[in-house]
Image (cartoon, rainbow, N blue to C red; front, side, top):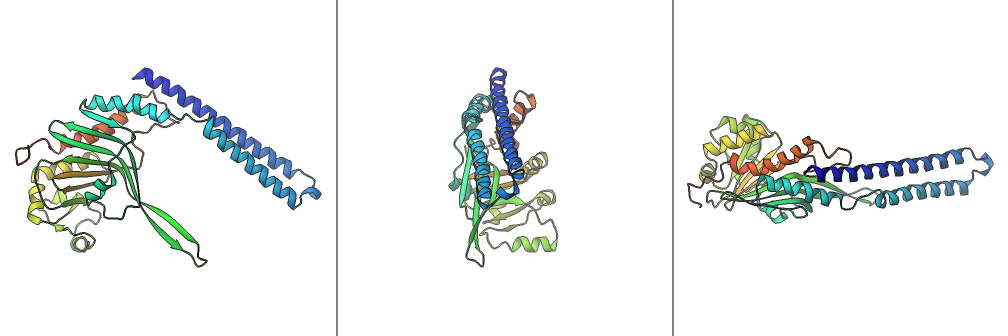
Length: 316
């Protein structure tokens, strides 16, 4: 992979150099224009001169943006990086997996998981990986879901604000047990105690009811809601709860799970953009490739970590 990384790194350096030149020239133009205006004869600084000064400053700024968006840009850099770097890493992790950089897990699957109940007004994603890990069919990608709110001030002006519901890795797997009701496992943000339990029970937005499990270590990290108390305990066996807890302790990112229609849904929140190179970081660093490998391996390892290939119950 090193020859491809070296070639991509040269392209990255070229873009950085060009952007630096554009920024410096634009700033120099703005500075010279300002200095010339300040040093004009005070008698000539009328309304017309102010107008022309603003127009000239705007023209310099717009020209810099246009040049920066064309000459100082590599249109295929990201797509080539994903084809030459991310795709080989996916195949290295497992030859049975397919990688589609422009595809992503659909919003219907995201909402079907019942993890997040907010209305989704804007949904996007990329970097879909899908295929079989031994006996288990999996799909995962980076997704971002948002909802909007609109407010109106006393002058009748409206303002739209976008709020992030979830941003991160969204994973789906064919689970190894049949079940009819939905079970949802959420981060325990309220802690433990009488008041915490009271507010958990008061989660009226969910049709699922609070499920009390006899595992204090698991309850420390998670709160569980289910449509069927007995089935929730059947799905969340002692061994599976231990594996989920161990997974959480190994990867500290916020973790959400649900079991709906015999599928397992997992959402792992990230602040960073996954599988995306930076123009300001050297691409030939081993740590960079290792980071992408670990992000992909994390998703694939869910099958092994949660023992999803163990089909001794009802599904084959």
